[in-house]
Amino acid sequence: MKLEKTSKVQISTTIDHNIKIKAQSILANNDLTINEYLEMALTDVANNGLPEYFVNPSSELTASILEANEVISNQKDTPNITTTREELNRMLNS
Image 1 (cartoon, rainbow, N blue to C red):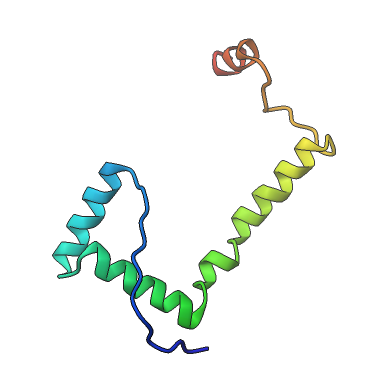
Image 2 (tube, helix red, strand yellow; image 1 turned 135 degrees about the horizontal axis):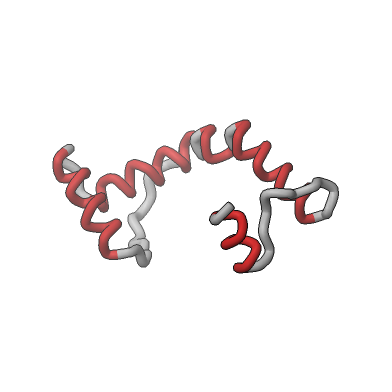
């Protein structure tokens, strides 16, 4: 679904200062500003949807989520998982 051009609106967001500085530097090396990049990214999402890697998690992530669910619901034995600091210290020092 292609969107028609309409009037512009301003978007405001808050981000960690260090992230902004790093991103700004990388973008500047590619002759882009943060505003230009965000406009391009949002326009692409509006016209094409989210990239596949946002929508479909990797097989590793899916397996980790399923394993965590088994652990949480006590369906899986977890011999290498500690619940106290003492257990963690004992495992690290063995």
